[in-house]
Length: 244
Image (cartoon, rainbow, N blue to C red; front, side, top):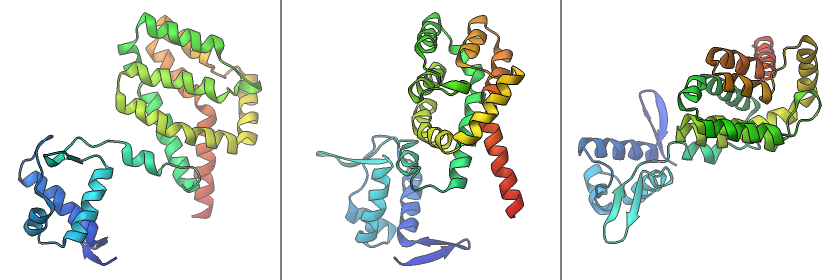
């Protein structure tokens, strides 16, 4: 595909037209639900070929920014914030470095939502967490069955009341599971070490902090709960430093 350079970065013609479309919507002060001119009008207004315009419009449809409606033609719609991310996060096609980075995002986000959890906590949520913990299946060395791990942490995301955070949990979960399976030989000795030191934090321990209303204690416990992930991330950073 033809490409050009703008601000010293190479972009395709479709990239350029996509940017022009977004600028056009902004310049016309378009809002959600507003009708978008047809392809012929858009191509003339933007000074581009209809074939390239169609591909740019197709990208915006994939992002959920535009829809075609009967009798109304194309309209501007609210994009799926994490829709594009959901399509590309696949452990089979992402590089190891990207997977490490995503794991780091998950850990940072989950520690970051501690305040939100306590702000939205209800007796019903506590009861649901108790049920998850009671039926949770744990292997040796504090390794949880995937379903137990997923249910507990998904419930924490749900308590925040933030739908984007909840959607992110569903996207990032396969990455966490992949890394835990890949580095099981590293995770087990770390957990054994933490157990020996009395520093292991289980889901049951986290629930105790929630039930007692100890927000600061819960945050510290969450950091300790993710200690094994911190070790994996530190190991990766050390490996990168050696090869730099």
